[in-house]
Length: 323
Ligand code: ACO
Image (tube, rainbow, N blue to C red; front, top):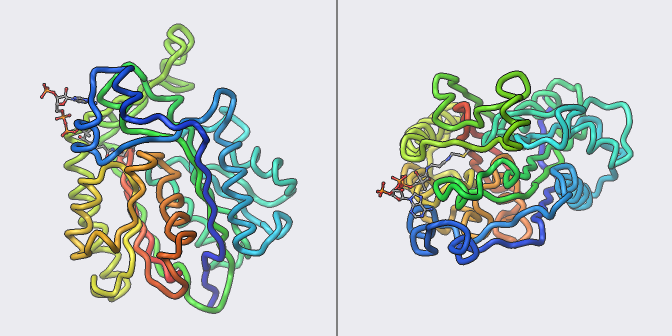
């Protein structure tokens, strides 16, 4: 039996930092409100001209280095992003060119904040079925480009960044299971209302397309849904919640993360939290959190990790990983 295993992780955050105090000068908000409601203190913002592919490239190279692989070993590239550089080609193809890799399959996955879980699930299936042996899986976003910086209800929540993993074929269990779900009935609770084939004239007219969110409804759905995905993941693997070493959640809001940790009966010192330093980086948040905890020595080889996320669509999902 072929398993897929994470053999290296990488991450990248743009240099520019925007603190809550900086935001106090931009909109009617306060550091105290943002910290109490979300747990966020600051976020990183891509420089003018710095693209999603630029962030993805640094994270990808760091993941390759950590895995002891060269770009030439990669035979599949999957990039999860909501903020691609171009309408087409995909950011995965742009990244492929940057890495000087030619010929292997490369495509983007769009599941907003659940994007990395989807990308990992898809890449895992490629590896398990023998279609790839060394996959590069990336979550990368320049979400700041689709945020209305005059809207205090959304602009305080998001940041930019990229995270990546190398997923290799092996005999030992690595990715134990992945779980992906969606329900398009909730489209308008969290969306960018315009795109290429709908409202493009408005985008051109206003030079803008922004995230719109009904935060309280999204919050409730996220807490309930993530509770269910935890149960589903444990059941599928015949595991008790005490057998999870680390919870590596999507970083949208510390209160959502705490609710999932309570559901798992996990103390917060077994939960990887980066939302305070990075805010919500959408598809990048789970791989960035994983990379942070691997590099600072918290997550060790052989430990069992529960990765989970919830986002626009709605989409939600999880991955149980023997690291
Ligand atoms: N600063 C100060 N006051 C604010 C701000 C702000 N930045 N934003 C809203 N307020 C005000 C509101 O106007 C409201 O005032 P009112 O009572 O006078 O009407 C008050 O604060 C409370 O607003 P709520 O929206 O009810 O606050 P809530 O406690 O729900 O927190 C938040 C809002 C942080 C957005 C929360 O609902 C949340 O985190 N939602 C989920 C976000 C999420 O998980 N998204 C999913 C992933 S994102 C993706 O997929 C792209």
